[in-house]
Image 1 (spheres, rainbow, N blue to C red):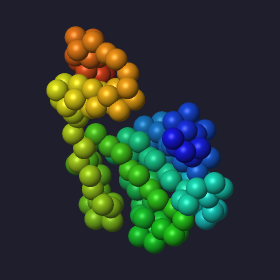
Image 2: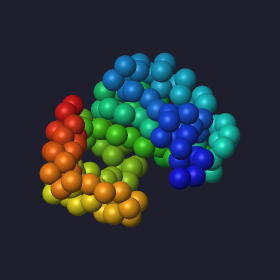
Image 3: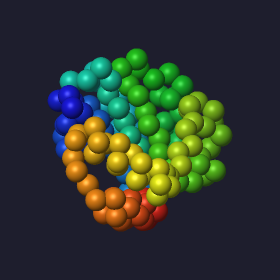
Length: 143
């Protein structure tokens, strides 16, 4: 794993900015974020803004975000995550590439775990793998 990936996994990568829109719904919060968009990334090729639960932003916040989504700086990527895409304004949706992600089923999780353990040459018990897969599926289903 590269250094950047390790820092992302540890929540320490300075060019990945995570925003919880559910707790930062005000237009002032969005404007503060947009004021920093102009600055180049410190370590990576891009500065990535991950806005989680984006559907919780206010109408004014969406309007403030719109111009930057229309003409983003070359060094910036926005990832807008939501469990409720129908609550996003059409003006926002039309400026985004959309990915509809679906959870893996238990068998897909088990197969992937088996593949990884095989690649890493780690012994495992099939029953334990099945239990881990079910637990992972349950964790993915939690809000």
